[in-house]
Length: 151
Image (tube, rainbow, N blue to C red; front, side, top):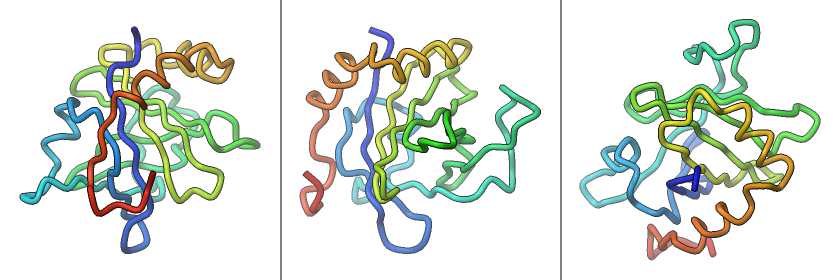
């Protein structure tokens, strides 16, 4: 299996905040960001700072952050902005991000150690070749916030 971890986020309070509703709960880079109550939230903002070096000719579309920069986010196909990618430099992880059409929720699939293969993974996801792994992780994920309205 290439994909190893899963997190689902929904629009939270404020302009940029997204709250985790479901997760496999085992990706250390995200888990250390939980607050004292165990809640996890991150922010999606514009790309005024561009950290990823995968394509120096392209500015990122968004960035994920909490107390620090987590990843620049690139939309794979600007005509269909549901599939995006990023990376976590500190542990060479590739991120596959699937946005809902209304951009009020998104899923993050993590491929630990596959940063250098992000293009091939994105192509496989776009072609539907990773659907079984993605569904496995969705089913493995647990409700992250019992008070959440997300299903």
